[in-house]
Length: 352
Image 1: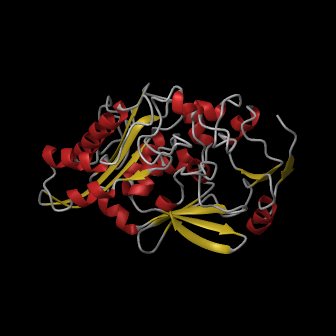
Image 2: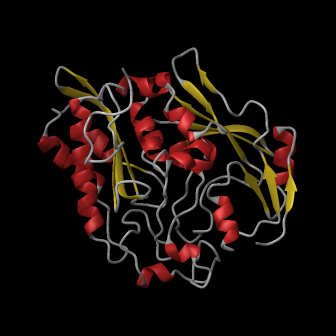
């Protein structure tokens, strides 16, 4: 591992000043960053430790019914917060489907948003990777690419974003609060991550020194709590990233879908909001025919980036299944295997 400077600032403003310097990186739990450093994939000159910054580890309920989640809140703490799981069940289910219990106990919600792709060519420093070294090429294009993107990819990069947590957050219109050299600002999480285009090395809209300090879920998102699910298909049931996933949330009145939210994971370089499918579902019956056509709309622009055409049909089926589960109602107990299509409804206390 390359030698680096280590700084533990006392305030957010000090952290921003330190991290704005070239070659600097923020350190929270480090569950992804430290692996990248040990493998020589990322070689920062300076680590800015934000774990002791005050006020970033709180879950705060807002007067309007929304919730503000500090960037240093641990994944497990958020998922197991009973009030949060009751209000935003698909988010809790997504959190508990990711990584292992040990990692969820350490990982932070802010770090989860910015984790790097798990593309094997990105991790292999002997391979060409435009994301790691701009201009070198993309060995994944002609390599092992069955798990790569089918939406929004470019000739320069076909990697996917690995987060489960981000998928329902995007579906439910969450907002990231950011502090940086230019002050405070907010950005919809849907707009935080960038598609690769000609600059796959730029994965988000964050500028040097920008720090995500919190996430906010709006009060309106709680209106979907009775019909919200997250479904994830993976190559093994636990400790694996999604081949494809879907977060589905419905507001149903007298058997008619009044509002729908749908986002996909594992199919693009960012969590993918399926707005065409949402628009199709509004005002329709929550039945198999409607869900089939919604899935068609969601994947209308999909195309293989290699030997992964199967992911398009897989994603369609995941959408139909996730919508079917959501329409049936959020279970009173979290499934024993969260987000798995193999799970039963028995398991840990969830919303009851």
